[in-house]
Amino acid sequence: MPKASDLAYETIRAMVLSGELAPGEQLSEEALAERCGVSRTPVRDALRRLEAELLVRRNSSQRSFVADWSLGDVADAFELRAMMEGYAARRAAERMDSCRLKRLKEANSRLHGAITGAHVDVAAFLEHNRAFHEIILEAAESRRLATLLSALIEQPVVWRTAQFYGRESFHRSHSEHEDLLAALERGDGAWAEAVMAGHIRRAFHAYADAHRGLAKDAA
Image (cartoon, rainbow, N blue to C red; front, side, top):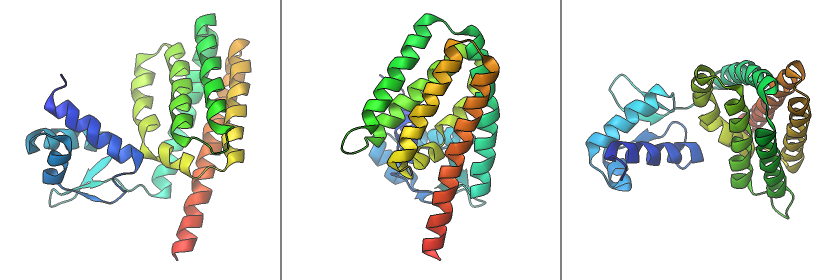
C-alpha cells in the first residue's frame, strides 16, 4: 500500500504531465487532497517534491501553481537533453547487447503500430517512445546520467510536443529511431550520438513552431 505522500505525488504529477492541470493553474491543497483521497499534509509534501522537479512553482505568498514554461525555458531543456541523451546514446552503442537491442526493436515496432492506424494513438506513442529512450539510457549504464536526465524527459513539454505533431512528424520520429537502431547495432557511438542529438533538436523545433503559431492565433 503506497504511503499517502507517494500517492498524492503520483496522482498530482500525472495530472500535470497529462495537461489535466494546465500551465499557470493555481493548485488548491484542499481540492487536491479530496482528489487524491488524502489529507492536506501529504499534498503539501507532494507539491514540494514537484517544485524540486520544476513541475510546480511557488510565489512569494506561498501559493502553488503548475509551472508555465516560456519558450526560452523549453529551449534550455531540449538543449540540455540533446547533449546528455546524445552522450547516453554514445555510451549505449559501446555497451549494447543483443537482449537490449531486441527490446529496442520491439518498442519501436509497437510505436509504429500506434501511428499507422486510422487515428494516431498519441498515448500509446508516448508510452512506447518513453520505453525506447529508457532502454537506451539503461544501456548507457550510468546512474548519474539517468538521474540528471529523468527530470528533463519527464517534463510536461514532452507530452505537449507530441500533441503538436502531425502524422508526418510521428513517422519521422519512428524513422529516426530506426537510424538510431542501425547505429546501436553497429556499435557506432559517434553516429548514435549525432542521430540522438538531431532527434531531440527536431522535437524542439516542432514544439517551437507550434508555440509560435499558438501565440500568433492568440494575438
